[in-house]
Length: 230
Image (cartoon, rainbow, N blue to C red; front, side, top):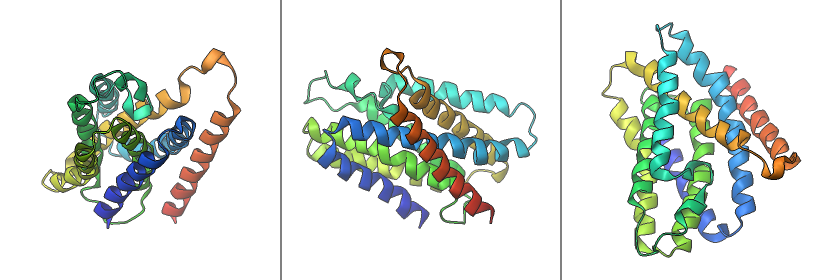
């Protein structure tokens, strides 16, 4: 069921992106909403679980996750937080292999902490699902707009299977390594959501829509957190 939900979140986002990808405003709003959701899951669920392990210097792995995401963005050019314009100047006949590699590694690592997850709709899983939707929306919009046709389906399939593959491989790891992987993912979540939320507003004007969407994302995630506690 978990694998099905992971794949479904990417498929739904990509299909929506292929039809409504020209609406950049909608994509931006979806990203901001997901960022509010993601940072709340990170602070309410991921970090408490990480620091509950009482592993000495576990914070270094959180920082490692932040740095890893910064390195991955050299491949994806900020695709995870909606910077699609960096890819639009390339020749349409060239498939962005660096983008595929960056997104695969990103999603694969996120899937590893799900290896020992037995419950469905946990806050962490919901965080990944909500996070997948805007990324796959932007991915679908970019691929179909540049008319990659058949490769588009292949690329989206690779992204959809990345987290499930990480989840399956994680079952072979020592369960004691779980806090380390969770800390790395926490750093990735923190970096992505922070960039989306705190990047400079145009002309430094107050964007009330952005603030409201972040609050809505926080409330949705907090509702998931409270439901999980009960």
